[in-house]
Image (tube, rainbow, N blue to C red):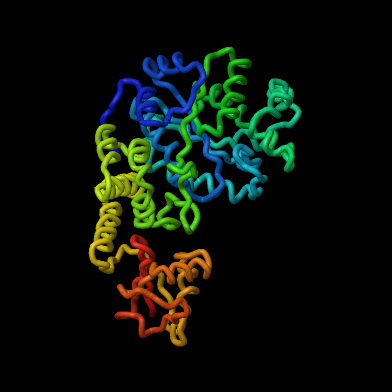
Length: 415
């Protein structure tokens, strides 16, 4: 596990100072509880893909910080709720997946979470709500749980209200009941007293908080944290290729490093505070650098996150590759690489088509604009004609390096 020095006696104060905290039920009570007791808390992960993303990393960081303060994380895999789909923050219905796909995704999540949390000796617990949701008796569930939810109140919530005109199914409408039931089950099974989630989960968290208090007459709590957004207010975690994954087969360590290295200057301090274990003072110092110096802060951020996700060795490799490319366009073995057949280039491949195939651009139109703006070079030579055909003559020892803009490199090899 990571060598981590506690910065506060109370994790609540750390979550506030680091910029995670959004709101909580009974804030003063919860702060005292976290100061005086080891609290079991849970965060849910709906299994919508076969890997967690950098967008999930804020939840993971919070779980790691809570665990290091002596609290017990319960990672709840949404094998059941994923079959419904959370309507919060959505304008359309989530695609329905098969049980087999969801089960596979949940197992992938469990393996990834094991890299960040210590599950030995019950220091952390993993559960899957498929275990209690998939075989529920509808009438029994509605008699015990459904009677405690007011439809009129639920329809005032943004997560439902925003979907009414476009079509909100009863299928999705049941999501809040199921997530609330999760809290009740985890309270009864493990004594979980706290549910945590992103700010878009506040309504669902309040549903579970009220349900447990009604049925168990016990004090439980809810807390939300800020979503990981950029300075422009956009949810972080999307690249040209799509989501930025924590699985290195889907997003390589170098690609993760470069994604973080290329963030907006305004986000450096915020992301250092929320996504690394560097001391608060160091995060603020690096975030306050100006001009070209801020690139040092970005490099540290990229290195620290890549180290947390993929380990120190791969973080060092990504750092060395980045430095080599920025300094002298050197080819590095860790650079993103695509191998293609020699036959493909016998008659030539259009530069625009090649850029799209390598996912360096989304369309030929985007590629054309980049070429016209001198934004594409091959083996250090700027491409000045968007009609250029890439042939074997463009390769040097069966490889070429395409540079997009100032920071993105991709190697193509042939065999």
